[in-house]
Length: 482
Ligand code: ADP
Image (cartoon, rainbow, N blue to C red; front, side, top):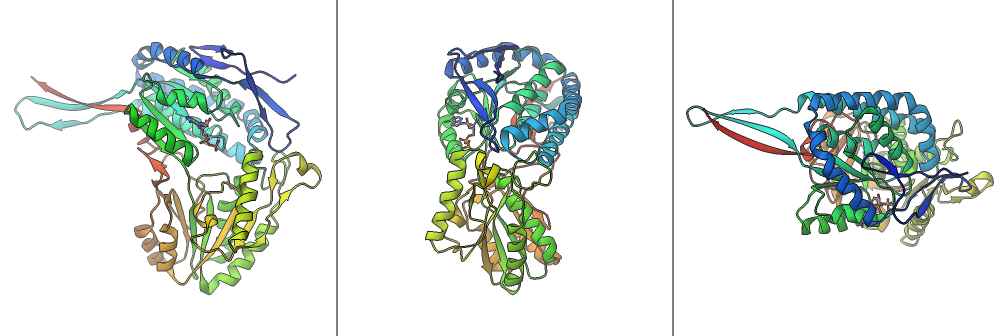
């Protein structure tokens, strides 16, 4: 029997009002239903927002270091259940088990990091220009915050929004992606067990309409969203109508530059990791590799060999490197992006196939794909695919490489492979991206430092690291005459 999972509203596990559910399907083997989840609508979201509003003051009045103790406890609980949750993550999202284990470890670190921030929610004391006036700032919670998350990091992204929101004293309503809601539900179970005030923590599962209610509801003080550019742009318009505080993390079309002085073996590893791992389903994945012409033939051949030899399959099996696409529409998007690239003149050097041999026919598998003869203005060089598809672009020198890297509306992550400190700094100084990597993959960020992009990739304040708390707090300035 497939298990039916519920919403969490006001501290109770409840069915949605219509009683409808939807299946969460394993993308590596579509015969497996990981669970049935509540197909919530606007009314369920309103219930959750009302519960959050009611509980918020109680949670906010819990001293911040005590809120921190609860997050520390949650981290320990997640550590105890981590192995089981990582397997569930592979089953619902498809990423290979070692990646799921790594992501769970990251969520544990995030909880511990923000738990510690509970004792550091400090303001500042600033000298007044007047006699016997004491000025200081305080950080207060916003109230009720709405969190809308995608499927590609089903525990890390919820953790990096929930933890700073809660430590700051907000009540939350979270709506995870309908394509991978189980890991978020596990995190909510754990936070509840750790002792978050009943009602301060609310989970609603369902499709976009549930998210839309979070965005438009006047009782939600701020919205943090990670997902597609199209949805994020629509949310920005809606949120602006009621002037809600907003944070959006959206797409990327991230470049990695390989200069002629790079260690080419290392560069092949960095680029293939960033482009293909997690099936390319990371907003920080490399989808354009810009190679200095002097090493283009040699680098291309080494990368082609690497790409062709990656092992694709069910992420629960040992030795598999690349899992499936999340679902059929996503697979179709990859297939049609590669077809379009070919029509536009690109050539496939490796991959380019929907894999259907043997057990792969049960899932949404696509071979890691390397494209050449790509013109920088082609769709494949400008639009995010969110799949294991990489385009090679030649550049005469670093100047041309950096201008190609920047010639895009996105600006999330950008990497360079070089042994020259001068070239590295030229790149750091000129590249338009929120995350800059030197001799490291464009994907693969750490929990304790700010995360976010420039241009069309992101709107609003940074996530992660200590600065993440700023989005979830209101700064107030106090003047006191004594
Ligand atoms: P993807 O196509 O990768 O699933 P989306 O941007 O559609 O990315 O989804 C990210 C999150 O946004 C999911 O939780 C999804 O349900 C939610 N969502 C989709 N449409 C809307 C909307 N109109 N308003 C608010 N949230 C939405």
